[in-house]
Image 1: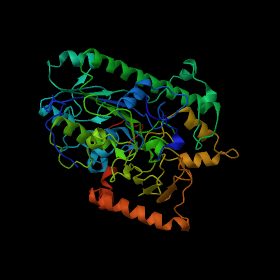
Image 2 (image 1 turned 90 degrees about the horizontal axis):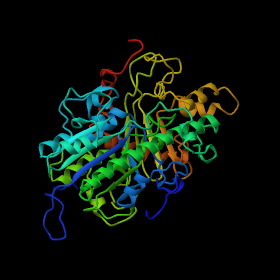
Image 3 (image 1 turned 180 degrees about the vertical axis):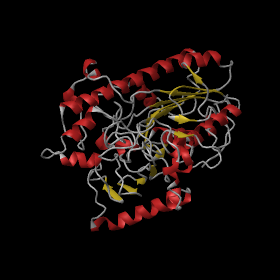
Image 4 (image 1 turned 135 degrees about the vertical axis):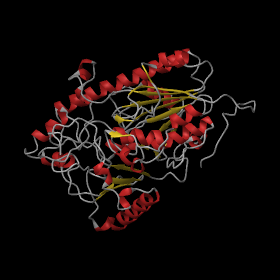
Length: 479
């Protein structure tokens, strides 16, 4: 059993090389297998172990109770392609040129952990959504595609260590309307975030999202059962997470917690103490160096992520590392959501236990997409089409409803600061209040210094290049 069932209101907000895992007899055991399960648009806190009262995630909960549950896990970018590129390379997406945008070409000169493991003798492969959407030029940056884990295991040479990317399409939209209700979930049990109006439509939409989360959880459980039947589970690093937050307004494509924070649980029976909750701030860019270090393979050049092995192998709870007190996230172009140009809405953020600071480099642009249209032809294009989006837009002129439209669709100032002690849902920007002036200056300075250290084009005067990279998604009309 997990030590503690967490409610969302209670969660606070060295690289070295090894040849293998050292067993109790002092000899190096064989290199671990790696099973990486990633959902499409699955965000925090939508698991039962984090305290969601409706969604049921027994597989995720089991991984957590048999390993480590992370409560402060964040992505590099709340957009599919750049988030996945950052995972594959172990680098912030803003360092990856065209790979920092959705529907892009994978950039030349950026090896992935999968390719490094293959070169080191691992049998590698992927299932369903791995890299992308976009084009990797046939390089198989996430490994050869298989029809499932069963086919992968049949083709794997005997006793060869493996690395498998299990990529679901759940809970990406679109959804089957009322699928959650038909599955037995109840509208009255849904906890609607306060940045949405409370309506039956939105509650139903959330239940449909939960239904797909549960399907992903079940499929991962079935895959782990295959590994156990094959006798491979004991020495397999199992990771389960999402590529960014849920596909709702103010979620996906945003740097608020509902867009940038993800579930993360990791187990490794052979080496990781179980039943632990860790509050260190970690990034999914940390996974690549973790996998490589565990396999005894050199960390990729230019890696900005840091291996999680010291945390995983520790027996400590809570805040394990003294140097993981914050995390950085960012966003470049998601869709071509602006009507009058092909640029995105670039932003960067620093998240600590107490504060979230976001800097919007182009505050004149619409973060959710232009209200009058886009190069796709639709309004607010950076919000996925959904009943929740329609409800907020259609009711925005009604009494007491404009605030919900503003939070999801409105323009935002250059500086956003949220006091998470008073405002855990990040709804009240305090950047212009005098009592927060010192905090604003401190976090902004820290953010920009770290962005310079990581060679972010946005702070080096080269950020407009992100607006010019080719967009490979379907267009309704051309620029």
